Image (cartoon, rainbow, N blue to C red):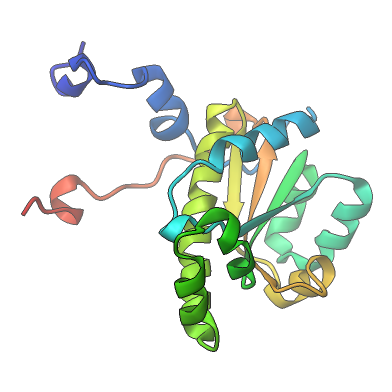
Length: 208
């Protein structure tokens, strides 16, 4: 046991150090993929796990469209920046992660005690709607990647696409807007780039 990580010896340490490696320390953004499919059941399992993560007022504005079929990939490919096309077409699945500006419609189910008052505050205040939607969808997108890694998949999150075109192609007739993409599958370990630096605790944090 490393003395540098004494928290691992605490009784309430919830998961193993190996699990922390899997979802954080050893995980890297993948850009090359094995020719190995990701089942629909596994995609459903990712969502079923990540949906329990906390959000503002228990709203769940994130929406996930999984691009898996050849037809769906053909629709997505021309909307990607050139540098993202090869890796995305090779990935077994690509999640289009969006946020639903009509999330207030689900308040009676998700936040019944606050549904009426919060619904009134949001009505006629599009800036607040977008702020809440993007803030909580961003949280959910993070939970999504942690869940995928915890279930054995690699992730390749990225921007680098035409948001407006993706919205027209995949979310037409809805209030859903695309946020970012995440390729999913089993990566080629040898292709991983050297890990970039991270700020240390003293550079990014204070205990007050």
